[in-house]
Structures are given as structure tokens and as C-alpha cells.
Length: 86
Image (tube, rainbow, N blue to C red):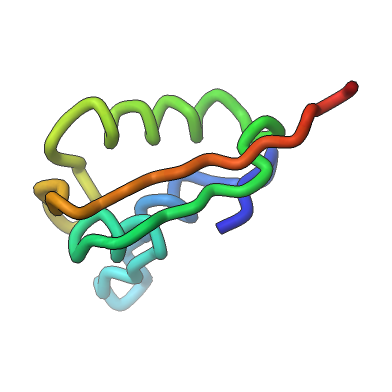
């Protein structure tokens, strides 16, 4: 998943639509069911994305819009960066 200045909290955590249905995200899928999450262009993202990700990784649970999810034991997160500006 590519992240950047336009990445929102909803892009990471999903959202509740107008009908009241939860719309998932790749982050939620990997966090809940296990798998590898690669966040590309991480050095171009804003502090809000970093804060959300830090909280997810530092704790064994995360509050998503529909409920609190326990981190799956096989969840792995990588971030990829370019040498931004140099």
C-alpha cells in the first residue's frame, strides 16, 4: 500500500459508510487475519499516519471504526522509504 501526504486515517483503518457498514482496508485485513503489510513511500507520509501505525505496532490491539481488534500473531509490517530530498 502506497502512503503519502494524502493518506488519511480512513485509508489505514477503514470507515463506516452512510448505510452503517464497515468498509475494510488492507491494513485491517493484515492486522486481523495475519500477513505482510508493506507501506511504500513511507518517508513522504505525514505525522498522523506515523502516529496511527506506531500505536498499532506498539500495542497488541487497535481501535478500528467498528470495534477493537487484537493483533494477529503473524502480522508483519514493513515500510519502504526512498532517500527523500537527497
